[in-house]
Length: 272
Figure 1 (cartoon, rainbow, N blue to C red):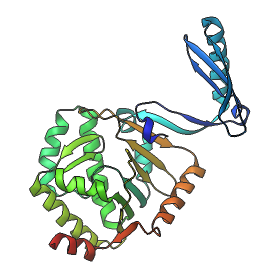
Figure 2 (figure 1 turned 180 degrees about the horizontal axis):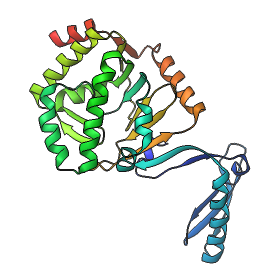
Figure 3 (figure 1 turned 120 degrees about the vertical axis):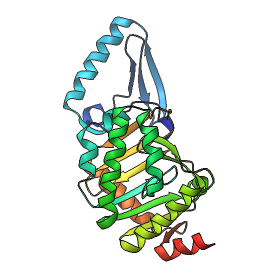
Figure 4 (figure 1 turned 135 degrees about the horizontal axis):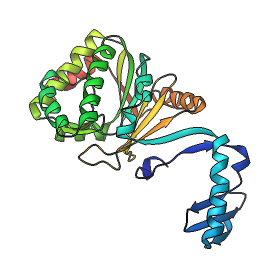
């Protein structure tokens, strides 16, 4: 649902008294209250168009959210990269990362001058974001336990175009930089055997990248992305959802369409 509605600010709550409310409200404009069938399809709907009644219902419901358990919240890239959630994510050393668009990690030194040049044209928070990710991954690549999951079609697109999203900054690697990127990945893999690549041979369309550690999860939605780095991030605050997502990726490793690649495998592909 999040993947196909990346242009919306969506917050998800868990509050049992609301489970059967089935109400949609657009403040000052419209309220719809639905009765559902046992299969959760709409049986009947009451539509309210009188502004006073709409807003009375709106404020009654919005006040109830103060006592709800927030499961997932949405922020802009600027908010995400200037608040503590990002920093808290990188406290750990164990990660599962699903990338829906290129491969933005373990970049070679030849990328940084041009990447910084582009960042300087975007604003201070973009520059700080590039600095933070670069410094953080210099450490993570040495001792991190990391599983990267990449769709085969996405990887092929990257090889052909060089397009990545570094944090929230679109960037295109030159053919020379792409070659350097592969060589740098090989170098890192040989030094740290705890970094693994899993290539997913599944053509299901995905716009959302997933970044997961044992306690924290956030998603980067690429379906709405502008040249200035405007995009949405979804931060998961529910430990239950985090653990279920972790189990999903552990199970994914054993699926017939998911193939593990070691340093030796990557080197063989590069030679070809």
